[in-house]
Image 1 (cartoon, helix red, strand yellow):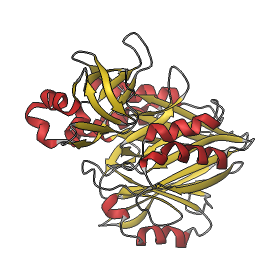
Image 2: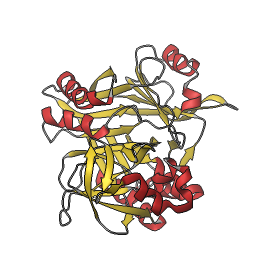
Image 3: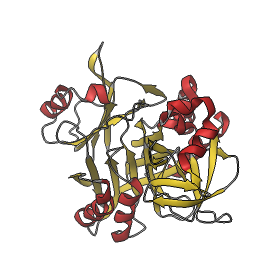
Image 4: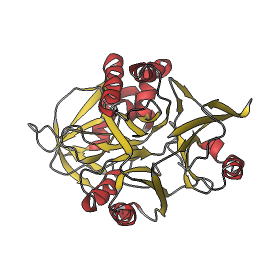
Length: 378
């Protein structure tokens, strides 16, 4: 496996950053800001230079390159496999209610005997991420890892873009299947957020829409905790995600973040399901905990291929970036240093992260985590 990385910015244009420029990649992962990806010439530049390559694009809330995050750029990672085959597919999202069916269609299309893993990128605003994952899981063996994330538009929450072998556009889901016995896929996902305040029962919800907590309007309660910051919803809610458990005593915690608010219904729309009858609690971030969580995710995702030529794809929640501000590079430095700066990193800041659950092993949609997928060949 060989890896090359390129970048684009308005001052330098396209430039080579890392690796052998003469490789023949089968896959290019391309992460960039929405404003930049809207310019279709960037896609056509890559397609012209690599006409036989699968090109996957996603908008981001910040582009990750090793131990730094960039804005208004494109980071393109080119991968040449020696012993691995891939198959990619794209589906249109007609409505949020289609999310489970979309997951099942992906599983039906990609589930072959030598499937080693699936990497998934979906529009960040028009789907129920947890339902896509549930649809996939309903037809896949639980030993097949599914990782990835939801495209982002930073703090804007206006429009996200995803593309497969075409300029990126809205309302798309792209999935890549990796096949063969030699490809090795690792995964890790950790948060670092701290719960506070009372635990409240979710007394009214539907899918990923939360209407009531302990019989009170959800948006009213959220605004109470946000105080003067309530007028910055939904972006400010990223700093105060919800911890969701099936019961008070259970260990199946999932973190959810707000994507939209409805003043008339006094409801909150989240990136994934908010099951009625479960227990919710607000959370806040702590710098040290978040950085430690990022390093723990790297430890979980470590794979042994017998070769140092590997790639780590980092998908971290935009809420982490908002909270950490100028210190955001600290979580990237912790990961890069964990691997002694020998593994190239790429990725983006997202509206949701997909990875098997650390405790149950079941694939889940996560929020407010640093989620890492490592890929290598033995």
